[in-house]
Image (cartoon, rainbow, N blue to C red; front, side, top):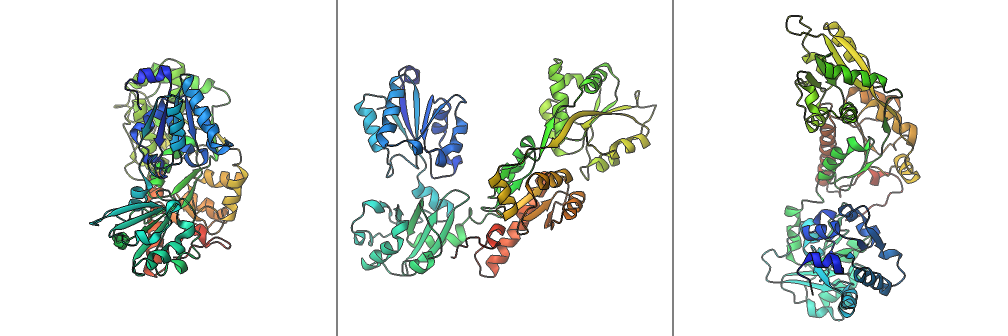
Length: 529
């Protein structure tokens, strides 16, 4: 049963059994996300579905079923919370209606007279096939889904005229294939086995019923996995789109501050990579705030003609000072504003300020200077420029502006200090070849990463944002494999994706299974197709 009035639900309490989907956290339904946002209690396997807690309020109570001793303990806690007037969301694997283990929990709610709702999820039976490039029902007369744990006689399924999808069967995949052949299925029938479907760990072995044993022997397949039998498997070569992404499954180290790495990480995920953000720089306020206080006062009182921002962090520092004084973007009225590049420009636009000047070529201090007009006393009533920057900023911009006739107030807006070392497993992965690539966006990220975690392994692909960063990397004994064609984080990610695509193409052309750099180190597990 399901109550119609959710205001009543909030007062009396109820339980929502929500399908979490097949593995990709982005396949959660809108209804599921909405219920999680209003949950007082979230009941889930935290190892599997922990990322979905981002939809919840900060004060949500989390019940980790992996830590519970018995299933009836989960039911008891769920029912007690609902009877106390709380909204409980029980996250279930896939779709609660497909071979689900929560049937008894639903029955317990009904028996206890607790209102409940069942929210369908995207089932692995269709989603995993789609992510593997196998159309679930490609002009087939039949689409049959079975649970291997509930099948005694496989001969009954040998007559499936379309696509046969088998849950919970990977451990018995070879006996199942033999039984299907014994039931009359041709041994040449295409079959695919996909593990960890819809995640960046997804791996698919394509074979036939007759050759499945040898082909699976070294694959290391484990649950969750699906077995797909039928001619639709033959379309995978043309329709595979997920596992063929240029950086599919690559574990990429992003050594930047958290704020800076967000957009870069999202771009890497679009290429199929698994970004790991490891801060190497901590941004802190200046030791003495008086210099910035005077600069903000001068900015408001008309001391400057120009304000030049050389980083998003500088924009953030000025914005925070504005908020401290009760000011907003209107204080920039009458000022000319320059931004060194796209990221800095975006930070300014978010603040409500549109830059008047940006480099049209190289996004650097040199590129900005190439565009900067010389001081002209007839056109410029004031010859002073405010430069709110980091404490370790170079003198290039100040020297260039001075040559152009401008007077500069070079103000320390923030300090950059080396971040704390990452956890031991991260350090071991860096030095042991557990990462496929590392992106260096500045010379300081090279120095700081090596300083807090050690040098990346020689199998790790080293990607740098420009020549100066490449020089620093080489000084530390690192082999530079990839360089962006222009100095931006977005261009760097794109360059790495292009490198990965070429690696994949070379392997496929040679008739080999594409392998990530980390799989090429000594001792790495190798999957054989």
